[in-house]
Length: 217
Image (cartoon, rainbow, N blue to C red; front, side, top):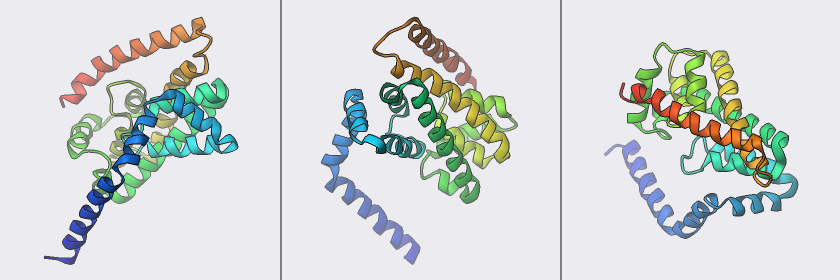
């Protein structure tokens, strides 16, 4: 047995043992993410560090699928209002997406497969072949598209850094506005919030229709 294979086995065993040993706090953390009141209370409790914590979580959710990005976006608007929530959410998501793009471009498919399943990469690699900025804007906004995975797909493809930055900024910006709006005006339930909810439903339907041919590719 080679040293590299032996090291891989030791690392895997250590990871499994670590997950088992820390299963209780991990389970508690997952429950925390699903409780909007707990999330907002924790963020407020960090004071001036709250935006920094949110920024880190937004970046991490690009790599860790169990972190619910949309819940954090709503919490961001709820705690910091529409303007503050947009600034934190948009900048963090764009930064996380660019990091995933650059790392996938730099270290290739083996790195991407550590975070995204090979089957997902295979399917969306084919669908994204020859596509431009508009396609990536769509996939970063629409539900039913693997939004974070598309950052890796773009990094593995031929799209330039500049063009992906444009797509990333536009797609994440639209998604941030719609989601942060819900959190920012959750207590007031104005007509604007109703419009945002309707937009979510419409985007969900359109996303499902648009994703079907690509998902089958």
